[in-house]
Amino acid sequence: MNQYITDNKDRFINELLDMLRIPSVSADPKFKQDVLRTADFVALKLREAGADKVELCETGGYPIVYGEKVVDPSLPTVLVYGHYDVQPADPYELWHSPPFEPVIKDGKIYARGACDDKGQMYMHVKAFEVMMQNNALACNVKFMIEGEEEVGSANLATFVKNNKEKLAADVILISDTGMLGNDTPSITTGLRGMSYVEVEVTGPNRDLHSGLYGGAVANPINILCQMIASMHDENNHITIPGFYDNVEELSQEERAEMARAPFSLDKYKQALDLPDVHGEEGYTTMERNSIRPTLDVNGIWGGYTGEGAKTVIPSQAFAKISMRLVPNQTSEEITEKFKKHFESIAPKSVKVIVRPHHGGEPVVTPTDSVAYQAAARAYEETFGVKPVPVRSGGSIPIVAMFKSELGLDSVLMGFGLDTDAIHSPNEHFGVFNFMKGIETIPQFYKYYAEMSK
Image 1 (cartoon, rainbow, N blue to C red):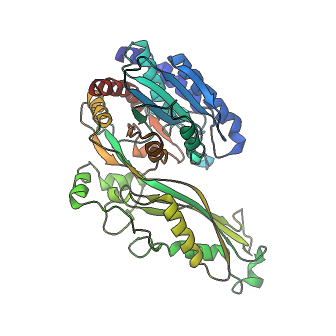
Image 2 (tube, helix red, strand yellow):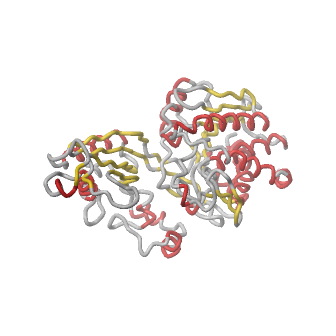
Image 3 (cartoon, rainbow, N blue to C red):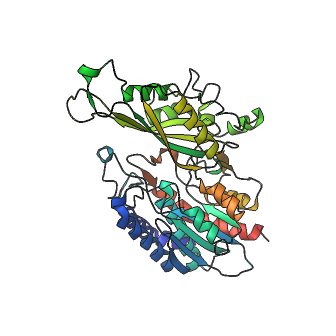
């Protein structure tokens, strides 16, 4: 198989570059036709790779690309999940090269979606082709590639509920996570959940002259900033009442095991150009971004932000806020607690509206399962070292949904790096990582089939 991968390396990369040129931004309606074009691209490549029954399954939003190859009903079945939509590329001016004109520089592919998730999703399509061309497909395989992950997968749960027979499998395989390093592979065993809200603060019924009204009328931006600032105390604990009630507290032994993962605080700060780190008192950086819940402002706006000066007290101010959740917290519970608290701390001089967006549940996957052990052996086969189990700070809300609806655990075989700038300008994905994924995934199928007997 490795010879086939070597012989077709340039074609595999060029196909990925072609897909990255399509701006499949699901959050922005102006890219609708591009998102649909990307779904067609994925369906075509699945057919070319050898999948049967490839179809675009319509939903209330963008279609889900489904394909399958059943080689023997007695063999285990792997359900591959990925997504073909990408985050908005704004702010465009911070990109070193246009986000939808991919370039390869210093061994890295620069483009929006290069790592999250087009590059990682496409590894599975090409790994499937490799196995088909070498008569080495050791399991049945089904593909479910959606186009709304970056906007909360609003229609995926309905599709899953209505298609349980179609999606019947033994395990779900996902590459939408990362690993510690190219010399330190890792498998994600936990994901944080998510509660995402938008808040609106309204003062006067129109923008006002800041000289004539300043000091006499509440400024919504000032108020919003004060409200947001009050949501962390001096130890960077979140002040929402009851926020930590159900938070899972890891034992000292579990925390010591996590600390064994290689991590350099100096390199971390250097990579981000930080004078120092910041976070919840009593926890390390790796713990803060994996096993502890958070509250972060993702965007804030209001008033005049154009060139020059305009002296106004704005009528309204807005912010988008996300909270990452850990096991035993639920998105519904935390969203309600946030709403109640945020409304309670608003002064009488303004009106406040909290609009929930999407949410998702935290999840921890077992490390003693056949699927995890097969993934670990696959990484060891291709990297030459055993992978480290780690908990990720990110969220893939559908992992918990797959467990509840399909009764299936997921194995999270990510090949991205923390330095890949996903969701940021200059997102990239290493050519090494892309090709290593194509090489490693077939080994998972091989070991999973062998160990499932």
